[in-house]
Amino acid sequence: MTMKRWLSTLLVAWFGVLGCVQAEVFTSIGHMTDLIYAEKDLVQSLKEYILVEEAKLSKIKSWANKMEALTSKSAADPEGYLAHPVNAYKLVKRLNTDWPALEDLVLQDSAAGFIANLSVQRQFFPTDEDETGAAKALMRLQDTYKLDPDTISKGQLPGTKYQAMLSVDDCFGMGRSAYNEGDYYHTVLWMEQVLKQLDAGEEATIAKAEALDYLSYAVFQLGDLHRALELTRRLLSLDPSHERAGGNLRYFERLLEEEREKMLSNQTEAGLATQESIYERPVDYLPERAVYESLCRGEGVKLTPRRQKRLFCRYHHGNRTPQLLIAPFKEEDEWDSPHIVRYYDVMSDEEIERIKEIAKPKLARATVRDPKTGILTVASYRVSKSSWLEEDDDPVVARVNLRMQHITGLTVKTAELLQVANYGMGGQYEPHFDFSRKNEQDAFKRLGTGNRVATFLNYMSDVEAGGATVFPDLGAAIWPKKGTAVFWYNLLRSGEGDYRTRHAACPVLVGCKWVSNKWFHERGQEFLRPCGSTEVD
Image (cartoon, rainbow, N blue to C red; front, side, top):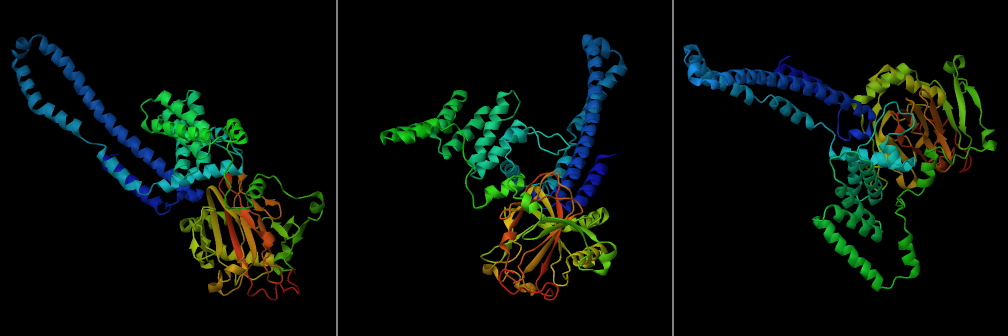
């Protein structure tokens, strides 16, 4: 295959996947799979380039060996060698024709095409934002599932099929990403992991002094002045000419001296002295963070024996819906109050794959509605990509919609389109309500169908670890099972929001999570789900 041909082939292959590769690729594992194939193509193109270079070097090496043998012979007796007229002619020819030809061969830039092609493709590569997002995803998993950096670095995660480890340089990248975001807590954890792996003898391109530089300043930002001073002195012992460390050392020493002059109380001194380099994770904006994350780990589930006795399995025929009388669905209670149920065998594998196939080209970063402005925007607490499917997109969409109508007994005429979501690295959706609250009265005004009365959530994949749907106020956790669906009402019969339904999609620890959901609205359900007589009905 010629250089021109394989470059053309590579370009065709690349542009075939570029339509699916968008910004924020880290937010969808489905989109990230395209990068796997793209990287495979790059490796193939690199191997083709290497073959061209090796063929070129082989020719040069053969010429060099040939010339070495000839010149060793001719230099031993120049006059005797040139006494033969053929030798004299060949010498003139070689220097006038053959050596310039070799020069042209050596000067051939066989890398130019590859480099030019790579430059074109680079605009479609993950960005700095993607790398930062991917690093944050690992840290999110680290916090949610209480994993220490060493466990993540060794790739010791449950349910994994492939071995994956973080090198010293990878860990350094994690720590630097945290540092650049002002996240000194994670900076400390990952820079300590860097030092641990360096001390174990692992080779790396970064030096120990670089890690100490980040680590010393991070612990200072966390208020541990004594350890910052100790680490800075350690850094200077490795690199005495480090200017910033020298300045920091003088600054830290001055701060300590000022503390002594202020005659710190014994209690404060003791607190500083007994600090053992263990730093608390900073408190953030989510009040139920601890409850939410414990449920994600399968801890703190309030499914008491008494409550469990109220949960049953049954065959569900949708209030004697004709289509379900012959083939009812298996229904299982997941929670008693509010009533949350799971249905089995709602979607077949073939239907799931078809819906994923239709949705994938349309996937875009999932958004949330700003409660103050009402404008849809991306948010760090929702990491996934989603698309909306209409019944005209494919018969399978209409078939699944109708099935959800039969199961719930609610009309889909006023429901939202079928939303398909694929979660990315550490993909999650932190605790939220599906219905609009009183301070968001205009959230669904443009639809003209009232509030979201109910949620029907299809699990379209199994998840090896993580990815549960949890209800922090209830202490409930529901784990994904491919082909099943869960259903609950967001509104009481009175039309008031049921605040107990605040829920979250836990970060995906291992696996690729696909879901689809249908939000049913109030309008059209008046006779299908009659109103209650009191506010709490």
